[in-house]
Length: 139
Image (cartoon, rainbow, N blue to C red; front, side, top):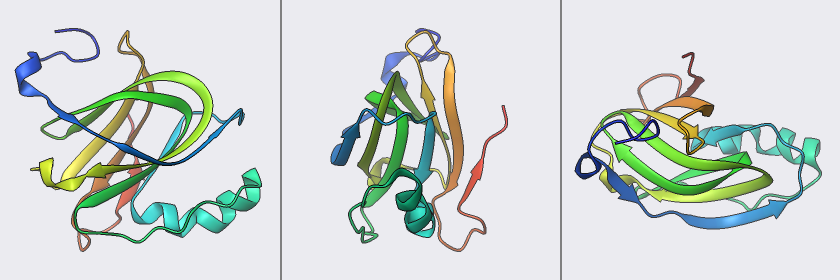
């Protein structure tokens, strides 16, 4: 147990993640865009940073995350929380996560440094018809 993972290790599901797109040396503050929010904000985001992101097609078994300002080192899931162990880094990453491990509809994605300090958090509704799919989390 640690500040990053306050429960016994056996209670966390380690999630493998695939990197679809990566760009380094971008001065970004830590942020996360999740699922359909990426497509909604894609054009404005591309214009802001001057890069073309790959086109994404939503699938039933993958969840896409666009993360900036930090490097994900590992990702673990427990209950409502998807904890991303992260290091501050001026990078932009598009990653995919397997959805089949999530057993809750509401997920709180938290990118945290190894000491447990929070970089960024966002709540996500896994079901499409559950209202606003993404909203910032206030802690």
